[in-house]
Structures are given as C-alpha cells and as structure tokens.
Length: 55
Picture 1 (cartoon, one colour):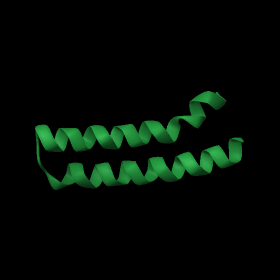
Picture 2 (spheres, helix red, strand yellow; picture 1 turned 60 degrees about the vertical axis):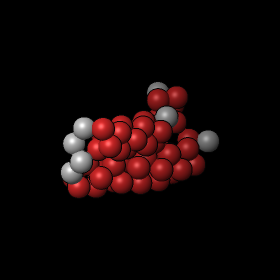
Picture 3 (cartoon, helix red, strand yellow; picture 1 turned 45 degrees about the vertical axis):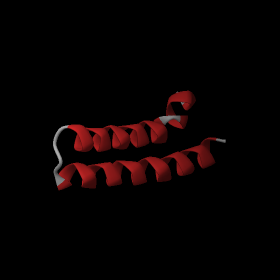
Picture 4 (cartoon, one colour; picture 1 turned 90 degrees about the vertical axis):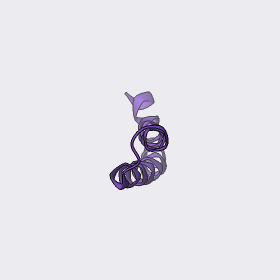
C-alpha cells in the first residue's frame, strides 16, 4: 500500500499531461486546460505531502 501511495501524486501529474495531450491533438477547450492545471497542482502537492509523511 505504501508503494501505491508514493506514486499517487505522480499518477495525477500523468493524468494532467494526458489532458494536455488531448487538448493539443483533439479538442481545444478551456475546460481541458483547467483540468490539466488542477491535476498537475494536486499531483505535485500530493506527491510532496504524501512522501513527507510516509518516509
């Protein structure tokens, strides 16, 4: 379970990158940009906070 939690923030960052790729290649709407920014920030902050408490 600890291994999964360590990479949870990175998974959110990856989801944000996927949103940016969909925005670039398929459907350029502002909602995808907002979702990508939110996922990137949540992933970055989550990665920092979760790893601080786990280790």
